[in-house]
Length: 337
Image 1 (cartoon, rainbow, N blue to C red):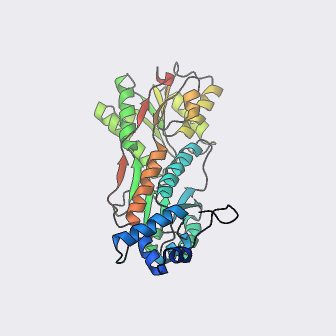
Image 2 (cartoon, rainbow, N blue to C red; image 1 turned 180 degrees about the horizontal axis):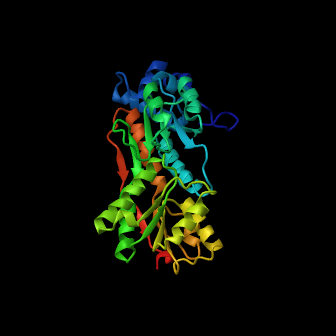
Image 3 (cartoon, one colour; image 1 turned 90 degrees about the horizontal axis):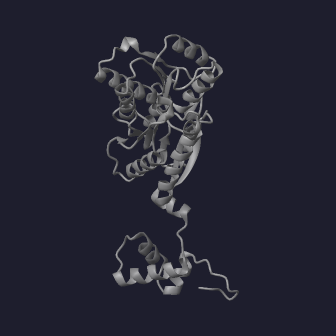
């Protein structure tokens, strides 16, 4: 519907009511789907709205429904270069679903004072719910969000059955990859893991032990090193591991695996001739490494989509239980040949 200058007019609620000869309340009822209107009147108003391109004011809608249509996303404050791909893809999945439901995503940092930033958004009523992108064994976030009675979803495993969480099947995937290594002759392994306060570390460790127990391998013959997430400690751990001549070094994530590879090259240790290497998480650097590294591949974008869908369902009163994303790939490459 052009104006006299050839530009399309921007209609208000009052304009629509005046054009159709009805009152403003009738137009509002047609848009909301509530109230007693004849099917003919509702259809006439909605057809006109479709033609003129009217869009309801988002602020007015949020005030009327006591909703902000914003989701708070808690991102770890420190994200290493190799972790960026996971969080970027996960964020992409969250934003995709949020957009489908008319929500915007406000990102805050989960830092040394993890509740400080999210508290401000909650206290100022700027968000309807929260997605926390990491799950810690000892974290004030869950207790704080419970206390504030804010709907939230955790990405990662949790032992708290009252918390809605979404996670990859890290335990099952790590068990399956480790079992495959064992069936191919691996008997003595060194598992190097990161932050012991991160719940995913424990899921991956359980998967490792599941495979060893199923194969009848002695736990005493396997080497496990956790909290090796600082560059300064890693060389010492790798040298200790190499001195015990393992068949395979199992890295809990891609960051640790990359650091292990750097140290092995410096030490003139050849993969897989001298020792095999696997990673419980994949990235493009491991895929293109020479030799390429056997890894587990997960769909981070899909994880983000499901987390956001769960939160939106919870906001709508339809939340169900926790969800484990079943899909993953064991990508066998040159490092275990």
